[in-house]
Length: 160
Figure 1 (tube, rainbow, N blue to C red):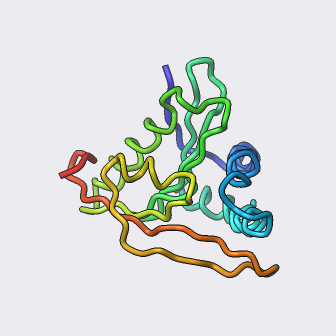
Figure 2: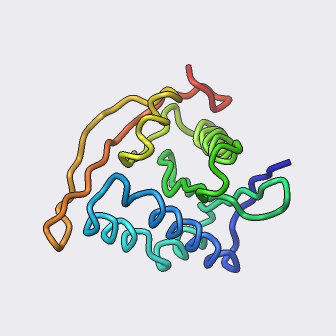
């Protein structure tokens, strides 16, 4: 059975590897090379370390005990939710999202996130609505597009 655990500083490389491997495998299908590089640098090891030190990073282990994905929760914002491509379709992403929403719902009535083009459809299906469409100009002139989304939560972490 899969389980979600809080990441420790010893897990920094695991979180970084999950993040980078997922970006490198998935994002080139949706974004230009410059946008992929920008996104990869945005999720730097230093940012991951800071989030781990703040107690905001979680990992999911699959039924075999292997790390399959990660999520970062900053107040009511769900960030850096990544599942390794080889673990897609096994429920790890759903488990991480449900876990994150439950954590957020303990203190907030809404969950917020920035949805990449590859993840937007999943978030819409799970009750998130678009608030804004954003474009970031990357240093080499490419564009990184994403949607900022919100979901109303009840006190148990589900949709209202």
